[in-house]
Image 1 (cartoon, rainbow, N blue to C red):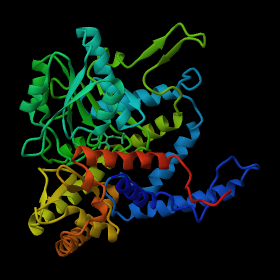
Image 2: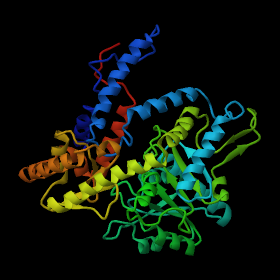
Image 3: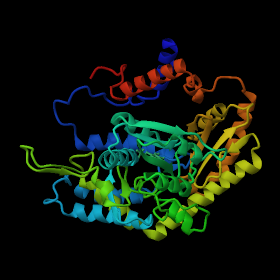
Image 4: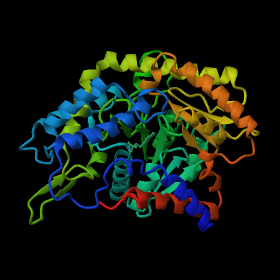
Amino acid sequence: MRQVADDGLSQILGDLYPYTKTTQTYRRVPEEPVDRAAILSEIAGMAHAEDDRGDKGTVSGSLYCGDHDHYRFLGEVFSLFSHANVLQRDMYPSATKFEGEIVAMTSDLLHGTGVGVVTSGGSESLITSLYSYREYARKTRGVARPNVVMPVTAHVALDKGAHWMGIEVRHAPLTDAYVADVAAMEGLIDDQTIALVGSAANYAHGLIDPIEEIAALARSRGIGLHVDGCLGGWLLPWVERLGYDVPLWDFRVPGVTSISADTHKYGYALKGSSVLLYRDKDLRKGQYFAYPDWPGGLYVSPGFAGSRSGGIIASTWAAMLATGESGYLAAADGIMRTAVTIRDGIRASIPELEVIGDPTFLVAFKAADDLDIYLVNDALMAQGWRMNPLQLPPGLHFCITRPNTAPGVAEAFLETLRGAVGYARQHYGEPAQSGAVYGFSGTPQGNAMVKAVMVGLLDAMHEVAPDAPAS
Ligand SMILES: Cc1ncc(COP(=O)(O)O)c(C=O)c1O
């Protein structure tokens, strides 16, 4: 077992250090400053090479915008405030304007009440919401053994946050349509439940849970409902305005008490920003920290972070202004046309694959019983396509973003996918490269092995390459 774990790890590690041979490895601060031009030229080389793949439009998710003029503009805005610490509002009152208006614009989009905070990303928004619900339940109901009820497809950052905060997670199964089974959720609620969670849309299959039903359940039990709109929050409102069928999921639904919506995804902001909205201020108060007794002075902070760069707040605000309603609508239009072409193309012409549920902008699919979807992925990868692998059940998803909307990309993908299915047919029974690690999960022993590989990977990600030449 250990050997398998080590083999799996060394296979993954092989891809982790591509620059060992082409760049110097620093194990200590260089004695003399390195020339700025040399630094820039070296990292520009890495950046351009790494962007190249995403810019071709063959990557699922990951890059949401892909417009380098937009990035350059945001970079310029960022640089004006990159050094500014927005904790010090007397020095940087502009941060209050930017942050307040980011919250206001997001709230307007999602029919909120204007109450929210800006965080560093989806995970921080989700984990912070859990914290707020835990605090609220403790104060108002004396909940001491908190649990949260959510479908198995709710984002794993919630499991991480619950793990850190001693909150029990109660996972509900999915219906045949792959969305939250509300009756099962109901069965998991007890007097220690701090909140319910649903997604719009979830990461795995891009599906929107029946938020109206979950919200009605939450209201009937007197608890809150967080809707994870990290992925869809900045896209679905435009998709709805374009006339697509999007079920209600935002603050128009009574019972939805908080929503996370990532500006650094379909808001087309730089990485490192998300918005967490609350229906009312009482719930938000749970995450505030004010400490008047510290020798270092009066300390107040809205969330997890202490010092924060003004660059990310300013550039997020600028991304919203520079895109505008018409820009967001045009982007959503391209994304939906591409997603529909791919969804319908799979349904119409690849009978070996099944589209999971009824998706909007993210198309997940699985294979018939006599086909290994990870072999399909191997063949796609060999031709430069990067999908997101899924498990339970095995599948792949293509999260459509702006780089994928270029003319011909959807058709080229369908063509390659048909070929990849042919490859998987021919090689059925052979071990798939891209499924190597997934193949071991599902049993306690197998899961322990996969965990060992994953933890080894995290260690490796924080170290220099073991075989790098001495500096
Ligand atoms: C539905 C959903 N929620 C939360 C997250 C977590 O966001 P982040 O990676 O910004 O922490 C993601 C990321 O893809 C997501 O798709």
